[in-house]
Image (cartoon, rainbow, N blue to C red; front, top):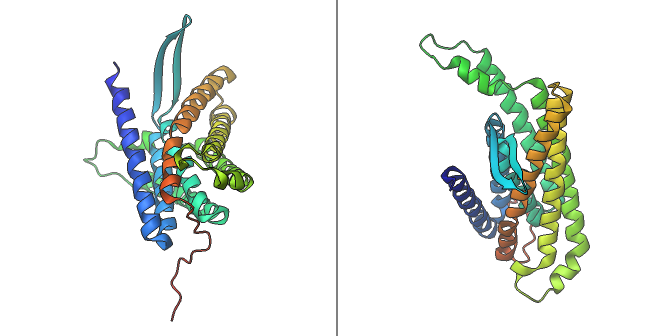
Length: 267
């Protein structure tokens, strides 16, 4: 048994559960602050993904039908489904307009993150600090990778938002007419599964092609391998996180806060 992968899986489940349950409680008890809390999670995921993406990881899935299945991908692939899910959580309760607002806020933080890292790289290191070269090698993101990250994030986030909103509105009557437990409502599962799978798949292709083929000059064979690795890991993990979104929806019921005021009116 691979205990490292088991460790990752257990912590992934714990993190997803904590965020889902805490998000539900905040949105239900403090609806005017729920958007800020979910956006904070969104921004935190993106910033963490920028750091984790500097590590390339490999998933050895064993041998199937005589072929060794080994997938290589940036480490952030396991975190991207969190990003897609929290955007859906915002869209579900606060609507498309505020989901777009969260995307704008997140993009601004990404730009600031890169600016701050650039400032730190140009700041002279202390003479006794022996890790400066190692630190720089990890955080000195190339222009191509940074540009690819911004482009893929922006396109896929906007696509996810519009797709989710469209499917939600289109299937809303059927969803409300469903008589069983909300956790088994197929129309909730459909919009989460569809939007996550499509947006994560497109993100995998866009990011790798822009970063490593156009700017990085890697061969198409290598790029294809990276695309497949990211595609499989992101989509599989993205599908795996759907039960948490459905749980979030079930616990919130028919909550709709698209018209909630974020600033209290003066008396």
